[in-house]
Image 1: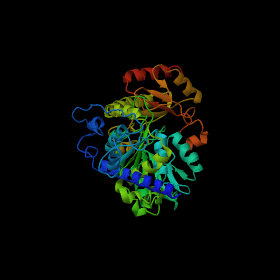
Image 2: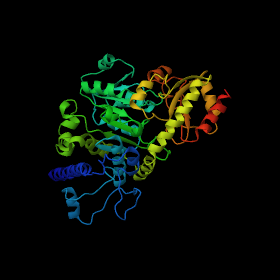
Image 3: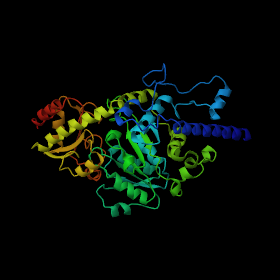
Length: 459
């Protein structure tokens, strides 16, 4: 028993030193922290800089583990005398470079890549909530996230309250409880295309001593940086615009480093009290602004996995290099399509914050002055069958569950992504039963419009 205790004790000491090394590596990486380059240049260059004789493109380090010549060299690694890697579930050079790029684009201090956007949202909440805790979320969120928060997390003892984004400050305040640990929303809701009032929700969250978590998938850091409006943590489904070509499934969690966890230590014991599984280490005391990120890797990735393969991170990085170009084209095309739909007599309604009479136009101008995204929500006059017939009549536009792709894609959420919800639940989630989600791609906009028109003629 004593020998077993010594082995566990020594292993924890080694892993503790590894995460100190990880923190120092990020802290001292000036290229990772470079703020001088503009967004377009960061999309291309941030995260990885080839040295003399090295490959210009980020290498794929597709290996589970890393070899050292002798035990002394390994000892130097754990004594912080040498930098290095030892297991991909915790750290991998390819994954780290892409995470650094995204953190730089968002203006954060650290980023952790996950195997999906769902995993990212789960980790962002689970890193600060445990059984018996509660959080508040906008009801206008992706259907999968709605189920994750409203059903699955409840099985783990974590409760949530869904609120309308249009609720008054007083109504939002009334949703807080003594055990509330976070507030969550999407910059642009999927699929309803509502714009989240980041600054207002951040002020209310901070008044109650909790962080604001914002899913920035649709806007991307090219069109909105939530940290600049008071958000504390940002998540993404990197499967969407960041990839842009439907080649990989992934997600990420980015920490601003701005939330003062110790000022509200009683609310966040996981971050502010000793962790017995790491020999009494306290994350925010040991790692400062990297405390949230380090805990996410040290605890959740250690125990639950959900890492991306280095190959997927390589593909994600390829997409990120053109993100700024693609987002501009998505927005340009979507604006023209939204205007066409707005004026078409067969269309009942359109939600796109670029339209001047849209309910979220003012918020769009505030948070997304350079464009929002390529996703439009609209409804046709008629029944659900009308929407289905129109979609089935499309020729170039793809009927797929995917969104935010280079190709124009379409989906009827009530029949597909949100089919588990009743009409009442759909409306509570901000999804009208007749809502069609049109993700406008980067093809020639006249071809997109031609396909929409010919399909409309058939209903």
